[in-house]
Length: 336
Image (tube, rainbow, N blue to C red):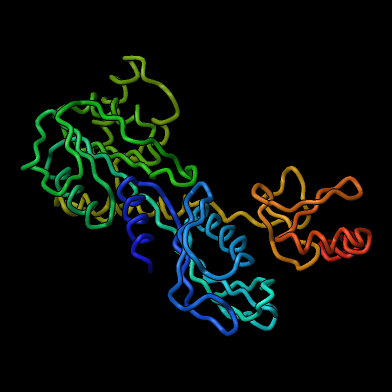
């Protein structure tokens, strides 16, 4: 990979900005791409690098943005004969470059780390920080008595009772960090801790306390005017039931519950739709059959009160030579 692309990727990662890396892992002549060629696609759709001719870029750009949306890597093949090039775990698309050849491209989304906010400095809180970092979470600690010596692994330590890191919910917008919070104050400042955690509106909120103690906390907090549906979503006692007793075991059970929720809360991949309409994210080029991103399509044509989208100027020109022929054939192909 080019050094400038590596540097750009590093800068985006440091800023917590999502992007996708596309790498050529296989090619057949006479494709202009080479194994190891790479490109970076930002969340906004900016394309940097090289993975073949300009005819490959729209497909790679579209699939990179879909990888960011569904947070899932994919392996795609661009081939002159995609039906013959279909393989397990590979999605094939038409190769429309005049030079011919084919390429396989692996697309990997790089997303901000999920964020865990731990309230308290109890032994359970300390164990949550250690295990959270081991799982790849960016971890904040909030406690009036907290210091860096107590939480050396934490990314940030707030010696206060409130913090406002990025908010997120299940199915969060593309690129937004997934946020969860755990109140493990355990008798020190429980009500304030729950109040501050509720204010974050996290995707997950667990309270490490007995049911009886949590009922008391809830009564105090709601009496102070804090209401909303978050209390209905609070996990208490926090964690899956593994008969945990030690602080590390309790932390393990809580993080298991967080992982379970996060892994079931990922958005479903968006599906391409045939034809173009105001609602469709994607459209099929009626000439070559390539899927085109409607929002960024540069080549369009109107016929019969409908908009058609094309991967390149050549396909558009061919369509305009005989619009009725290609429009009719395209509708028939999409009807099945």
